[in-house]
Image (cartoon, rainbow, N blue to C red):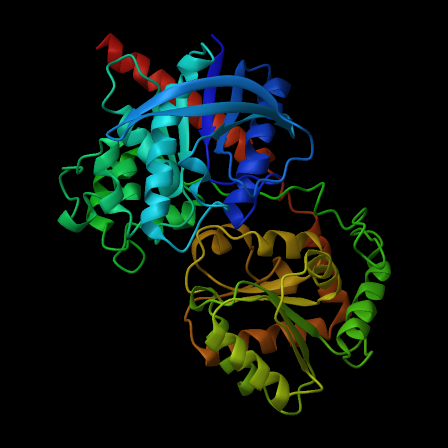
Amino acid sequence: MAVSVLYLAAEADPFIKVGGLGDVAGTLPGEINLAAQQSGIQLQVEVVIPYHPALHLPTSPDELGSFQVRTSAGQEEVTVYRVGSRNATYYLLSSKTISSTPSAYSSDDLMDGRKYAFFSLAAVAFPAFINHTVEIIHANDWHTALTLYYLKSKPEPRPKAVLSIHNLAFLGGGTSAALPAYGFQPAHEPFLPDWAEMLPLPMGISAADLIVPVSPGYAAEILTPEFGCGLEAFLNSRKTDTKGIVNGIDTTTWDPSADPYLSSNFTASTLSDRSENKSAIQKITGLQLAPEIPLLAAISRLDYQKGIDVLFEALLLLPADVPWQCILLGTGNLGLEEQAKILQEKYPEKFRALLTFDNPLAHQIYAGADIFLMPSRYEPCGISQLISQRYGALPVARATGGLKDTIFPGGAATGTGYLFTKLDAATLAATILQAIKDYNNKKIWQLGQKRAMSMDVSWRSSANLHIQAYLQLLENSKHMEAV
């Protein structure tokens, strides 16, 4: 039997990308299709996203027609468009409510609540419009989690429900008042706190047949009070229905041997060519052209989740007689941006704060940095550490979530990076100093670089694990029906 999977997301690269979800929804579906084809498995993933006014479409989509969705305010027309990208078909749903905000998200929680509540109703009605039987609906985060909750109200047989959690902290707060107009009622579940009964992500979790946090480490962490956002008892009650699957990266976009943004392309076998990228980024940022000085880098949203405040404190603790340079690229919290400016004033010869978003420059930094810094308070999966390892910049990272799943500890001597557990400036500074010490032993450092660059950080493993999870879910359903 051919298995049809409908994959729902608020954003998908290259059409619209705000965060990491855009990377996943723009790449993973096609990788699953490719892996299924290569394995001789009859399984096809198709994607449905909102047709945001800010959507960028490389080619004109096909208009397939329209259907009606009923709400308490009456019927609203939904127009369907279709476009292909990266081995997958993407359906774009457009309506007055879906177009109410230009981008994927706005600063108005209530408006976003109305937008995604309506999109959820439309997504459930969509398969009937194209006369298509769907075995699995796979939603992502709070924006599309309501689809699964609405689906649960439909009679059997109905598609199995899968929910990926990219960041549990975003529950859909502020949207509750918008939901009743679209027919949504509170979720009454054992262990679900009263305050969460009308929040989209917990509602979706309550209806999911399979819950997929974006790494095994994060799947374990959200069962604890530290990371469970007040839902840990509820999530523990769903533990047997939870499977963490780590993300990957698009290894065509992130390929140091062919990256068009680099001053010099290189491979693990031609590491000597990598040094030109370090010189280039030192020149661009006005740092001293000194190949012997270890170049640290962080490319990040400036947010307390990312531990940027701890990074600033750690840099202040590094001994004065230890040479280093550091480049920070990113924007975000205004207080952290101000701290970055102050640090640059204190260390004009060592530290550069590039408070902007610049994709070509990010590629050059990954290729030129020696040590990549990720002191996150929590990190569901993380993509930057995958890129940095592929580009030969060894990560120094907190042992949390997906970071501890994707970085082999031991440093350059035996691993692919440096992990630390206690999140404080002294611990981070000590770990950076260990990395700097190893960097000064070129033989050991290059072994670590080659080890890191040889890792498989593609979507291949994740795609195969998703296929296994889908098939197992359907197999378990058959057994239940037989009983």
